[in-house]
Image (cartoon, rainbow, N blue to C red):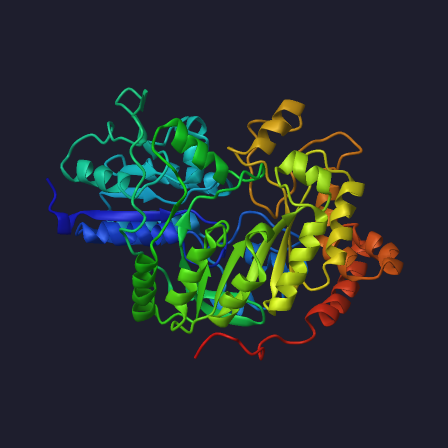
Amino acid sequence: MIERHQFRVLLAYPNLSMMLTPSYAVGLFTAILKEQGYEVELFDCTPYLASYEFMGEPLPVTRANKLLNSRKFDALALWGEPKKHLLDDFTNMLDAFKPHAVIFSTLVEDTWPQAKDMLKVLAEYPHIKSLIGGVFTTMAPEMVMADPDVQCLGLGEGEEVLVEFCERVRHGAAPTDIAGTWAKDEEGRTIHNPPRPLVDINQAIPDFSVFDERRFLRPLGARIWKAIPLETYRGCPYTCTFCNSPRQVTLAKERRQGLFLRRKSMATLRREIDVMIERYRPEFFYINDDAFLARPKAEAAEFVAMYKDINIPFWFQTRFEDIDAEKLDWLSSVGCYRISFGLEHGNEQYRQEKLRRKMTNEFILQQAKVVAASGIPFTLNVLVGMPYETRELLFDSVRLIREIHSFDSLSVNVFVPYHGTPLREMALQEGWLDPNAQTTSVIAKSLLRMPKPYLQPDEILSLQRVFPLYVRLPESRYSEVRAAEQFDEEGNAVFEALSKEFFQLVYGKDEADRMLTYAG
């Protein structure tokens, strides 16, 4: 048996290149493992160059600039040149740290190819035991387990699983019968272990000390902030068909684990915030919740009362159903700096029938006025290239957003048919998706192969890049915008010229001096 203080655990974090704020889950796992007395190190894939390009740009973090979704900033000035030799550096880390266990954390579908490459490297070290977990292992365990280099995977939450796994390894026992996991026996057969109860999210406070300090830097508005993530609840009460969060809820019910949606007590949240301030001196809090205001109004008031003397601005995302003037006034008074709203699509019928989003356009317009009156800048999130979408349907989104005059910025992403989502199943049933196709990210070409008149993959990318131009420029300029849809020399030149005009029109007034309204 290895002594606790001598037991070494390497957290491997597959992540898209330069995707900013540190992983909350990695912070939780670091804290839990250190509490056990283990020696913990992190191999973070974030600083490494992506293996693909978008519009000539290999850094996904700067895509918002390329797509006119944000103010300009110099990513290289913030984080330096990206690293290039991920697998070599991973090998060097294994040789230098000599871990007894490697835990691949926060795996999502986009980073599965990266994780597979790292697992191949790890296979050269047969004495090291490995566990892999995240949303993707929960949504597609059969696909992950089929990889010959996967030893053990976690289904669902990992806070308790990783401790039991490490303890088995530390004692020299085979980690093959741990509740909440699937594992391979010595013959390579898969052992399906039973689920385990959901965790108490009030127990652990994350530890981000394993991350490079530069990972806390986040551009938001016209400023660069030292930002720390917060989780105030886990799960989502909504059932959007493009998202796999609802599947977490149904899986918990099917496994008789209880209600997946859990909110932290305000006492717990205040304790966590105080610890984050003491340790990291943040300038900004980045709330990770799927829909922060999807909670009783009394609880929103409780949050405001708890937060009133913090004096640190914060961001969150939510839905238009969750807001009213009073709540926004409360939040503005304690430092709400910006809000992101999920709009997704502007066609009311499509939104209701295909996305399970029951809001009417009239309601959206009314709520947007409420946000505008609050004075809090807000972003609208839009998806393009969803199943059954035509060019005309997409322009319903353009037309609705043009009526929302008060929004500050747009986030326009390509629909990705993630495992665990009803829209993926819809696309498979139509024969529009290869079930073995590998997603890469919301900035890559669509995987859907829909017949015309539905949108085609190249057309989706073209419309993604010019979408803000159609929204912001007068209709008399649409012929120019249409020319900018083409990814050729002429189209790129037109897009470049319109982009310069766009940035001056939309972001010409710097937000950096905007007076914040938080107390203090």
